[in-house]
Image 1 (cartoon, helix red, strand yellow):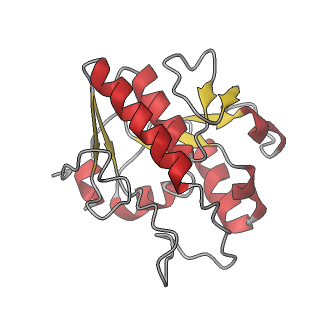
Image 2 (tube, rainbow, N blue to C red):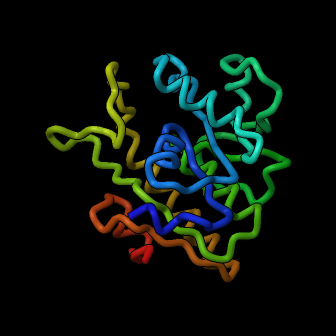
Length: 185
């Protein structure tokens, strides 16, 4: 029930999730993009450019996204590599084969004490898998779940070691054995 996010602050969205903002009546102050393939499909590109144009939100992008976006408003971050966790985004971030890793490093850098991951099923192999939005052109999945889980586990440990909390709100996610499940409500 994403209506629970109405009126909340410090919400980070990524990729096509701004579409949920309009549907559920909440607003994210931060937006993340890391995969240039997101701009290969016009409907996804339109979602991203609409959010980038939101003057009440700050967009953070992987430096390679600069060639896809003809605006200077996003904050472009240097990619330090695939595996790791950066506590200081001024130096850059680790992409971890998922935009979620940028969102986690952003939440840490901004000082969030509790971070909840919404969605994040990682179940790309189930028959009939589809995203929360319709895709006229379905983007091929990377199948780098093991890389993603490795980096989520690293992020969880860094959060815990520094007195912060990281939870996942999808009890069916492939990440739930690695990140504690907690209902958003």
